[in-house]
Length: 543
Ligand code: FES
Image 1 (cartoon, helix red, strand yellow):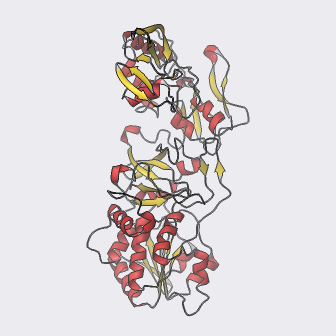
Image 2: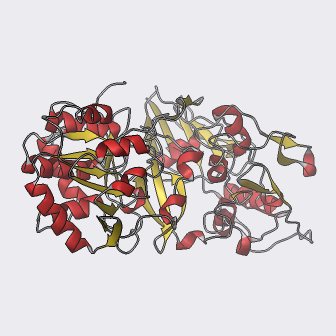
Image 3: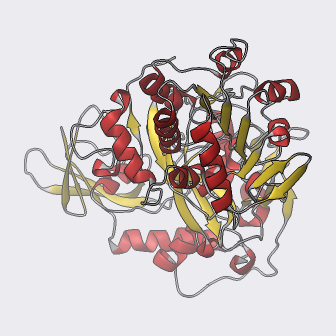
């Protein structure tokens, strides 16, 4: 055990987890300002913003003996008997000097800087800086250059903390960024002919403590204080990274990582980060429609639900295909409904997109080739309802067996990309009734009797189970386009339930009834907020 005193607060740290003073101070609620330190990167101690007073308790006398010089909290370990002071006049003066030095050549263009409102340089200036500026080296520059296909570097805003350089060296191991020149000419740059375009490049924008590295897809589009953040789960691949979906007035402006030690400690890949353009595509399906002979007719939801409900009730063998983009709660509702119509109705998982191969990085972060967020969750659910997780291929083979062939198929799609070809759509079309809910027109929607507009990932509440078996809950970030209803909403109406769809309620129900999801001793999935924050490990083991 290490006993440490920080601002007169005693802290006991386990020997097996030595930590630096910044991390130790956090444990007792003390925030030490810092620029270059990041807990996922190596420590370089270059910015000096984290200077604190240090000393030790003399073992013989029990007296505290302080050192004359200040020490960087990022590169000083909180060892047994050490004493630190983070708010003395000496420390306050040192922080003000560092802040003043950094602002000497800074353009101070906060009114037009994307980072304003979440900039450490700005925040620290108000907290620790001097009221008066003692030097003024006008005119300020505001040089900007493109360092990658999606990232701009505002050179004069940079405080040379080097987080971005270390990220590219230590995490992606691509080393596109480096420090050019020395002294007052020193700046960040990319090597000639090596643009910053690795699959995780967008993380340097989050890592930048100031507005030096900017995401051009976000640049000048929204002030950060207008953004609302919803905790969610990335649906880009089967890793299921924890994310924030940041939006304003039902428009998503950016997706950022939501640190979760169990999934994605600090990062997300660019594929997941920029996977929101389709939400606002003008090509989205936004109205229910019925195909009458050769003509497609838009109908209201009430008519669609009544007609589909009547047709499914009177058909001999209704089946449902559930895509891996549908939440577990919606899938559970669908299974419950179809089994109420026919106790042996086929329940199948829709096609699971796979692109390329898994890509792993130095710290174990993996971008999975499997591009669906919930295949593993659907397998658990179908094991319960079906006794086996019927794949799409297996389901299609049922069309060859005349006796057990489905007479009606409802496809819960929600696919953001192309997912089915014309020959497969023709196989599905062999039934009497074909209903499809999806985001975009596809070969199967073109031949369906009813087409229902589907909600996208940011527009639904519900949970997903990642490939490694973590069950996480995602909150709706924006409302869908006006007429669109999520699968959970219209399935609830189809089932004639009086209560509106509430994913939380269905999650509780699943936790009670599906054995693989009974992982809570008490309190259900919402106990301690884990389900929503870092998720719950279902202990499924690796595949
Ligand atoms: Fe310690 Fe930069 S954070 S020197």
